[in-house]
Image (cartoon, rainbow, N blue to C red; front, side, top):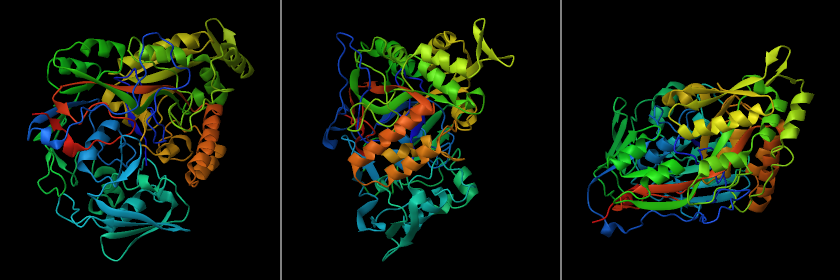
Length: 560
């Protein structure tokens, strides 16, 4: 299972940046040093989605929604695949064996699997019974071979498959046929506590079994799907993705005639909403919120998301030096960054002091000391000890100036604001930080994924499972640790946490991991992202979802 990455465009809020409930499955809010701004409200932790029964909804209609960038890879398991926008659409078009409900709990999706049960604890064995009606859009049956193929292509044994992560799949010993082609038996060699996170989304073996199919079969197209909707048009020129009901869908029929997603960067989505060109928009910065809060025919919905904004470090350049990364951690005032993000929003935002939990999660605790607390003098001493001497405004060593760059997408104004604040903060300790703006559509594929940056800002989106964050912090040539910052201690502890079935004991281990993450200067979480949504008041069962809650696309529609 992977975390989902997203631009910190609407952000000031947070970015996918693992906004996590980290990986915990709770719905949490922003953490750490909560703001004491008078008059600001506490962010709700339950969903506000204008919930209505299907009987109250119109039959038909077109829903128009924004996405923050063009989606080029539709295989979620491929290294370029786990984007928040893509996942939103895939929840309507691909099989999810378990979905996350409004309380952060995984729930079996019986449209695809009628039963999933543990048949043995030693070795851990799971038996799945696939719904007899479950089919792919090409008419073929969903069978045990699709499960087997997902395991084989994503377990990391064949490096030709460019996977986003192997967590969980690498622990499986075998995926075999049960009594019929609709029965699946999954046997683990190493216990995996988050087994419910696997096979979601599921892809057809017919389309992803070879490395070329896996890496390119869903690049720029969706050849085969399975869901209440199917993608009927991908128009890169117009930046639109259109999905319509799949006539072969066997479950509850969706209410809408079509959903059109439109790629809009920067604040263009707010402009489009105010012009009534789209029906819903995230408004998680002061500027964006102020523009829509008094708009006519608008409902404002709020909840706590599973996303957080963070600063990521890469070891491709000067920051391969751990002492430099730690100095930056001490020099950056994350509370000041959180206030930039929160601005005049009516809700409190504080720093997030843990990479793996949100503050409302049961296991949350601050692990910033002694390596992540704001301490300018400690930062200066680290640089002094590392041989970086003061020479005018900026430090030098061996005749080389201490200059690094922060890479941000051109359509992310909040990222630019955060970068400018850090530029001034780092100048105080003699570090020159330059801003490198790149094309929004190239940001992840050409810069983030290959680790082609010194520092960058984006948002992580949690999935409701701890395991989804594992490859962000562990070592290896593939996975989501784009900056390749890790340690053997983190690798060992992560294996322990993933195999520990007792959640309280596992939380202790996850916090040990977080301390190690701070100690090596992996990244800096800033603040958890509120879900503040402005939308058409007639739009129902959509809006400010709680935590990593999945969308039930069959219930999304407009009231009568």
